Structure formats: structure tokens, C-alpha cells
Image (tube, rainbow, N blue to C red; front, side):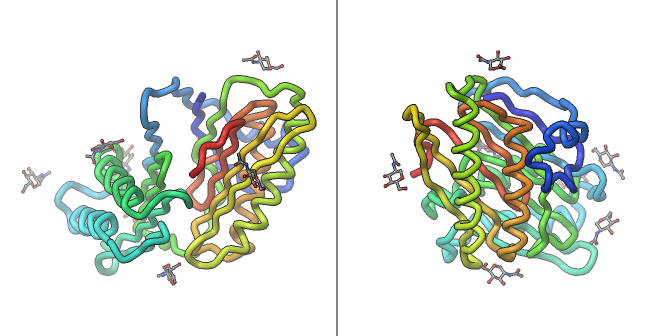
Length: 258
Ligand SMILES: *[C@@H]1O[C@H](CO)[C@@H](O)[C@H](O)[C@H]1NC(C)=O
Ligand SMILES: *[C@@H]1O[C@H](CO)[C@@H](O)[C@H](O)[C@H]1NC(C)=O
Ligand SMILES: *[C@@H]1O[C@H](CO)[C@@H](O)[C@H](O)[C@H]1NC(C)=O
Ligand SMILES: *[C@@H]1O[C@H](CO)[C@@H](O)[C@H](O)[C@H]1NC(C)=O
Ligand SMILES: *[C@@H]1O[C@H](CO)[C@@H](O)[C@H](O)[C@H]1NC(C)=O
Ligand SMILES: *[C@@H]1O[C@H](CO)[C@@H](O)[C@H](O)[C@H]1NC(C)=O
Ligand SMILES: *[C@@H]1O[C@H](CO)[C@@H](O)[C@H](O)[C@H]1NC(C)=O
């Protein structure tokens, strides 16, 4: 897997499924992260949304919030939307586990995420971290029910699909079908997986997920943007991922979900 960080906003690209070239101008290569051994940890520390200092009220609130989140044993649907603190020191956090992840696995992922993100982003008020099994983000601003369709990362398998044109077509159809399913989910779960096969028997497994605090329309819009990035980041590739704060998609030529 190659990983690329999206370093430029992509608002306005959602209609450009066929407009890859004009959209591509909005991207540049920021970081190519070589294949990591074991768990990939990807984070964005937002340097434009204010900083906090060690031992400040914000810092204490954030740490309390993250430990409350990862120690909660009541939530069994993999979505956490918690806040802690007052006024300017209030912190909002969202934790989202992949839809097939068991509650105890989910907690453990969010615990690692919370422990790592505050070290990787030691003073940013707003940050996001992505693991294979979960995503965690926090901000001093409102994030619940608010769509952020800007992807943070793209990842792709370096190997090309055979009969790539057909593969791409079957893939787009699969992802669009999954988008509709996921978006029509309820406020606890907006997640869908399925597989399809090309005429030369290449299997494609797809997964799409939104944070379930989004409305159906917001989830649709988020996934539209993510799916429209596939021909840009991952054209002809056997596997790819688009990771963003409000939604993510992944496809592979093998079954990767539970
Ligand atoms: C978040 O913090 C930054 C910097 O302290 C501040 O400028 C911004 O207004 C805050 N956002 C909200 C929603 O309070
Ligand atoms: C916040 O901290 C980051 C890195 O620690 C720095 O790059 C950025 O300029 C700081 N922002 C402000 C407003 O001080
Ligand atoms: C924060 O608090 C810890 C423990 O009280 C202390 O060791 C550390 O020096 C403090 N850091 C700052 C930047 O004040
Ligand atoms: C960071 O995450 C790794 C797993 O990726 C975990 O083993 C480690 O304990 C985490 N660190 C903290 C401080 O939580
Ligand atoms: C995939 O296809 C592209 C374009 O045809 C080519 O440049 C690239 O080398 C191929 N990659 C592999 C791993 O075969
Ligand atoms: C948190 O999520 C639950 C489940 O999706 C939802 O019912 C609740 O309204 C959300 N709370 C906030 C403050 O957004
Ligand atoms: C592929 O999807 C079909 C339903 O769409 C399902 O019955 C089948 O078990 C799936 N195959 C694999 C290997 O997951």
C-alpha cells in the first residue's frame, strides 16, 4: 500500500467523476509513506485551528474526554460522540469503529488512538487519527452532525487490475450501490459492505462508512466525494482507500472485512 496525504481542500470536486484532470490540479503530492510494517497510523494535526499548552484546562478536558470515550462499555455500535468541559475549553470528540469490529476490539482501538494522537499532535486543538479498525477526531469547534467531506488520506495497492477498464466500472457501480445502503442507515450505523465480480472473475470487495451522526444526504454527499477520488488516487489499482473525517471507503481484491 502506498499512502498519500491530501494536503489541499477538495471542496467542489464531488461532481467531477469524469473530471479527474481538473480535480487533480487541486492535489499535490505531500507525503509518500512507504508500506509500514504492522499497523498503519495516520494522523492530521490541524495547525490552523488553534493550539493549547500542556497542563491547560483544554488539555485536561481532552485527556478526560479521551479516557471516558475509550472506557465506555455501554455503547456497542462503534460510534462515540462525546464532549467535555465548558465554554472555550469544551472539547468535542468522535470515535468511529469499522462496522465489523467487535465492541471490545473497538474500545482497544480507540484507546490506542487516544493515547497516540495526543502525542503525535501534542498541542493542536483539532486532530484526527486513522487506524485500520477505528478513527478518532476531536476539536474545540462543533463537529457533531457536521459534514467534512475533505479526504485526509488516500492509499492504494501498487498492483494494477487486469482488464482495468471493466474493473473500474464494476468498482464504481459497487461503491455507488454501497453508498446508497450506508446512507440509508440509522443514527447508530451507516456502514455497508458487499462484493462483485468482473466478467473475467476478478472479485472486488467494497466497504463504505459514514459517521452515523450525518444525515442521509450528508452521508451521500461525503461518499460521493470519496468515490469520485478513486479514479484520481487509485485508477486501475486492485485496492484503494479514501479516508476522511466524516466518511471512508475501501476496496480490495480480497475479502478484508469480517
Ligand atoms: C477554537 O480555538 C481557536 C483558537 O483558540 C479559536 O480561534 C476558535 O474560535 C475556537 N473555535 C470555537 C468554535 O470556539
Ligand atoms: C500551533 O502549533 C503548531 C505546531 O506545534 C505550529 O506550527 C503553529 O504555527 C501553531 N499555531 C499557532 C497559531 O500558534
Ligand atoms: C505539566 O504537569 C506535569 C505534572 O504536574 C509537570 O511535570 C510538567 O512539568 C508540567 N508541564 C508544563 C509545560 O507545565
Ligand atoms: C499507540 O498505538 C499502538 C498500536 O498502534 C499501541 O501499541 C500503543 O500502546 C499506543 N500508544 C499509546 C500511548 O496509547
Ligand atoms: C500500472 O499501470 C500503469 C499505467 O499503465 C503503469 O505505469 C504501472 O507501471 C503499472 N504498475 C504495475 C505495478 O504494474
Ligand atoms: C450522539 O449520537 C447518538 C447516536 O447516533 C445520537 O442519538 C445523539 O443525538 C448524538 N448526540 C449529539 C450531541 O450529537
Ligand atoms: C459476495 O456477496 C454475496 C452477496 O452479495 C454473498 O452471498 C457472498 O457470500 C459474498 N462472497 C464473499 C466471498 O464474501
